[in-house]
Image (cartoon, rainbow, N blue to C red; front, side, top):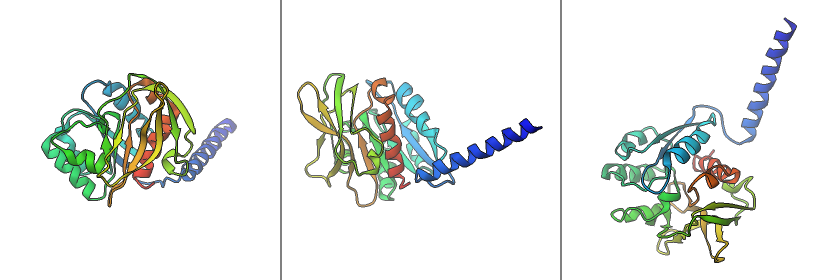
Length: 242
């Protein structure tokens, strides 16, 4: 009986400790926020690294409920009950889904665009890169190691992120749109081959929505990196104003 009481007591202490850590994170308890991640397309293993790594990682947090899909026809239906949209795809997006995304942003709902989704993918949808990505990429270096440098340590997205971290990835030659609203660069990627630097993590100025661009994320070298994961969860919490 004494051992039973000890187990119960230990469980209570652990629960209290976990609750305290949750409170210190700045995230309020309550109903989980619904997150929709849309993947699919070419040149990347979306199932392995976005569905089975990033989506599961985010879903492990009690305050998030993550749904992953590669069916772009279903986006409009999902967005009716979604709090945050994450695009990681480079496949075609159905016309009705593009309209649904635009309406989602108009309502002030947030969106995060990762890796392939910050490319110039959709020539028939210039508004996407101009207003939501604030630019885009049309080329990248070969898959090799490069340096990531945090240039804005005061932003919540870079909280607890190493000031400098290296991993192997496709260094996107991201170009901000000079005619757009502008971006706030938080992390830059520096080529170890040429010394050139490009935006790697940034927010996009928008009158209503919180928008985040993350150019990293080709394979396991980024997705399993602790700083990448910290940037990812920080971006989600910032976008949701948590």
